[in-house]
Amino acid sequence: MAAIQDSDNRAIPTHVPAELVLPIGLTEGPEFLAAPHAFMASLHDTHPPIFYSTSQHATNAWMLTKYDDVCFVLTHPKIFTTQGATPFPRDPKNYFYMIPLEIDPPEHRKYRGMIDPMLTRNAMAALEGSIRELASRLIDNFIEKGGCEFTTDFGRPLPVSVFLGLMGLPQQMRDTFVGWAVGLLHAQDRKIAESCMRETVAYLHTVIEEKTRTPDEGLLSAIVHGKPEGEPLTAQEIFGFTFFLFIAGLDTVFATLNNVFLWLAHNPDRRQAILANPDNIDRTVDELLRVYSVTFSGRTLTQDYEMRGVKLKKGDKVTCILPAANYDPVAFENPREVNFHRPRKPVLAFGGGVHSCMGAHLARLEMKISITEFLRRIPDFQLKQGARIEYWPGGVVGPKTLPLSW
Ligand code: HEM
Picture 1 (tube, rainbow, N blue to C red):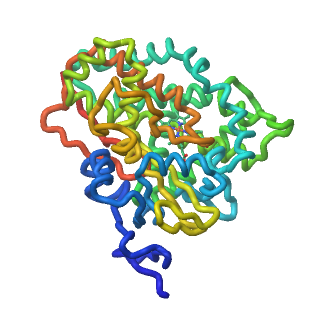
Picture 2 (cartoon, rainbow, N blue to C red; picture 1 turned 90 degrees about the horizontal axis):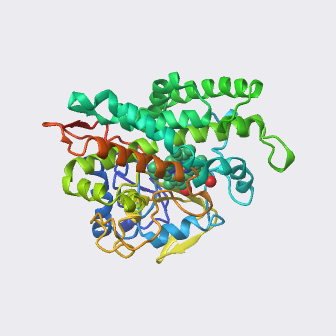
Picture 3 (cartoon, protein in one colour; picture 1 turned 135 degrees about the vertical axis):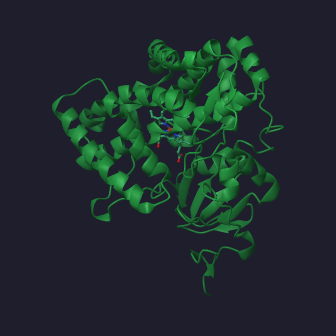
């Protein structure tokens, strides 16, 4: 039987039933880009729980939107491997794995164990004072101006500066790193992504050499000098680990903050509620992470497997649409309502299972500090008059710019 062709003439495996081929333009189509979270929430009304979508810039894959299905996939790595699950272009002659994401258990534990202790809740709590100071300094720069471009004046510099500090990377490289990360994560032109990849790779090799000669207290040094199970990592492993941390840590908190502050700009009464309930800030952050999750989990099937009567085959790709799972009405009552007193239930913004996010404590802390410091200093603000919000295409979802005024 000939393979079905979708509208872009890309092959769809023959075992995928034609009625389940429902391309949604995830991360790239006009409906998604117009209002990504509303679009992903609406998939529960418009699409079956499992369907197959094609992509111009990422991979064709089965799409999963239900909370329970996503939890199942993330907690069954023997069936759903992370190998080959990220879309980054790599030189096949010099291939490296994104560590720890692309390593399955039990080997995966070895890598996580190297730096998990440096990213625990307690380790991050020790940074609270310095992150608050940084937030305050950033706000000092624009508070008297009556407005700011939130993404570049606050949303970007805060998490990126903290991350560079943690990694032991130079602060003066901040804008260059950001440029590379944007090219890698959002460029729709493969040539741009590849050129950013080359520059990032060359830079990281230099910095790894530096840390080899001159160790410090940062994460990168811990990777370069670590000896899990008594042996140092190979050069390829060190590189893959460093590269993945760089990708994972630079854009995600930024995108989350931009989404959240756009929502805050539109919801003055909820800003008041947050200010009036400082003790509820952790739940507030969790609820905002639920409604504004920014990324996805990709997996590849290691065997044939049937889910909800749909036959998936070995080698098929699966995309867990985490933002959609967080809007599953079966898991969360009135999922579109932002409710800071919602009954507790793990949100999937940081994934789940063995690969759940290593930066989650840091991300939560940065969100908590950003929200409380900004609202304390600037309780009333709105979207600048006439501003039009556009979203980045790509695997980390957030607005490109966010002009605020007060
Ligand atoms: C709000 C911000 C963040 C979000 C929404 C987020 C989201 C995620 C998600 C969904 C995963 C799981 C991917 C998968 O299962 O396929 C993940 C993994 C990961 N994240 Fe984050 N992340 C954030 C911030 C960070 C930061 C700041 C760092 C670095 C300090 C980081 C480092 C990692 C690493 C290393 C993994 C891979 C863990 C493993 O494979 O064991 N993340 N993140």
